[in-house]
Length: 449
Image (tube, rainbow, N blue to C red; front, side, top):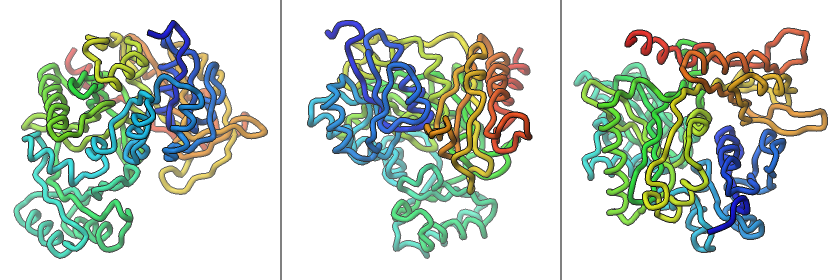
């Protein structure tokens, strides 16, 4: 057993999710220093954190850095290095790595694989059919038959498409156009080599994640995020404009059902010879027929991480290391959570998810972080000569923590209101955020009180 505070760790990735992971790992009494590859402007400014000039898809470079820094754990944030086999490479080098192997990460890498897996193990999901690149005419016929039977569909590129490969048509014509966009126009490149066409599910969506050591799925608090860029769920889809936890839509009865699905998934993956370690992230639709799986992701969600990890009472380093070594229940029998609420609001560059400016100056960070219960996590930021500037579409995630949802949201927005991407004194026109994050949770809680 290592002595207190003598373990260094490496966090792979450079977004808001990875900033939140790095901050939480640093809280562990066993962690001395956190290296981030490549990190961002936020991780560069934190105490006991150092950015490394290694890309998050450079598997060889990441393993080399982990060996050179003699880290005791590699914690992988995004999906791409997992699918590229980073965990396998770390295992071969004798480095504990938190995340699923390349084979296990296929749950996210291939929607066609995951849907077939759901069917094989009777995991609850929407009716579907998979089509390969040569099946365009058959796919169009399937769509026409579904609409003729009164069923709407969702069209998905099977491979990784940076969260943009799910098309939700409003009618038959749009559905046929979506199939063409993926299969003929190749809008998502190789990610569209296979296409999943599935029944449109109606209900409330919930993000349900679990820590897994390959044997047990220890469920986290349920969360909900906001995908559309504008208030009232208007505008195009994004990577996520805000989130909150615990999500009140997942009632105790529904939680039992979701927990069962997550546990059965881990057990089924072991049967398949694809032992699943890391974060298992189930996107569930809460329908009149119960919780149905939309898809699995093989890592923490973003921005859900920015509300889940601040609520984690257990030591993230100990949990992650135990999962990586297949011993979660032996070493952390119960993963504990705080009895509080969290909400995060994403501050984006105006124009996101379309074209947007970069290099905008960021003002008000110190004031925002000074608000009680607020932490600002960086995503698209970098250090420049004149100070911190924007470098991406989603720039910051402002998280508020409190004893209840109303206060958590209030604190988050107090933090947001301190921030600007324009010089002080003039009009604030370069920062965009939603003003209705968590509204459904507040309404639900008010109705049930």
